[in-house]
Image 1: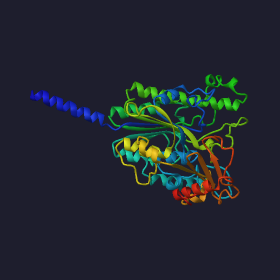
Image 2: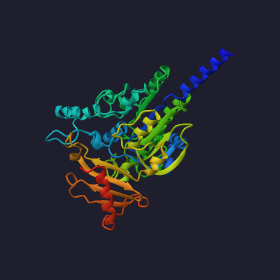
Image 3: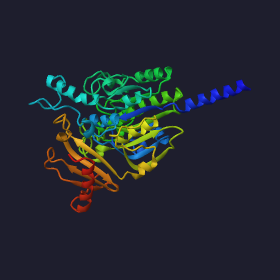
Image 4: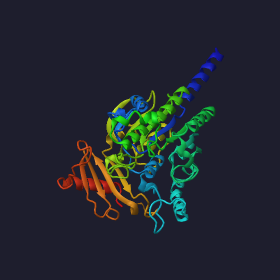
Amino acid sequence: MKNILLVLIFCFSSLQMVQAAPPNIVFLISDDQAWGDYSFMGHPHIQTPCLDKLAAQSLVFTRGYVPSSLCCPSLATMISGLYPHQNFITSNDPPAPEGQKGIKPNDPAFKSGREVFNQHMDQLATLPRLLATKGYVSMQTGKWWQGSYERGGFTHGMTKGLRHGDEGLKIGRETMQPCYDFINDAVAQAKPFFLWYAPMLPHDPHNAPERLLAKYRDKTPSLEVAKYWACVEWFDETCGQLLDFLHHKGLDENTLIFFTTDNGWIQSPDSPKYAPRSKQSQYDGGLRSPMMLRWTGKVAPKKSDTVVSTIDWAPTLLRAAGIEPTKDMLGVNWLDDAALSARKTMHGEIFTHNAVDLTTPASSLCWRWIIEGEYKLIVPHSVNEPDAKTELYRITTDVNEEKNLAGEQAEVVKALTAKLDAWWKP
């Protein structure tokens, strides 16, 4: 009888340990994709069956926002849980060398500036560093702007140091094997893992396989648009491959899946470039993205129009892993309904492509924005946008931000500006 009791106690203790195991965490991050360009968001032509399936299993926020609509600062926000003006990573690149225009990565002055630029990441309590205190291993793949993956605290990674990815950019487009190998190793070591999957898709070059492009050629008169749509489905396929791998490894039950895009995109019909009011803009075409959280058995699938942000990812996953967020993290835990309901405003900021001064975030500021209720206010920073005007939109009905109400709603502008200044006044 005593032996049976001991066996029962051991089994119960083992069960508790299994139940208390911290969850694995996977980030799925698309690159340059419009917020409506998914079939689960109602696009009439684009097919995203893998993400549709994920959406059916997830808590889906249809009105998600990235704080800044440019790759590098947006991704830095996700990994740090801090706004760009907090983490000092405001732009894609350091200041251009004097007398030069554009990006010249091999220029010694540019390399020197990027080293200073990358040092900001060294100082941050990033998610990989915080998760490591609970025994997590972590892997970077895809887009990564801050030099070697090690500078972000990742234990494993693909990017060695060139601008926005080097070897990391092979993920998705050429191979998925590094992700599979990392997961297999983590499982073999019985360690929880954090996987950063941020392939350069559907980002240009829009060179999806012909089998995908053929599906869209007759859906639009613009070949450039068709190429972009094909790359959206290509990204969807790769997400499906990764999710299928997790499923076949039996990891669905204790793995948090987060999904968003780094910034929006409106495809120009006449060139491979993006159209105005999308990437790097202060408008929803650049800032808005659907966001998902799947935690099978713990988070009920549903759709919500609550306004959320990638600034929320860090406090959400850290608390799920049993880690207290840092005091500087201003996001809201998505697993706390009361906290979500209590938040009334959402903020963000847009900066110059190349930073003006790497030690002074305000020097590169172009716009700040705030959403409260039905309104979105956009306030220009006169230093970099001297001719721009304040804009106010009733964002719930004017989804394309076409009618500026600032002249008609002076009191709303005044009230929202005060709240924006209380958040951050440069």
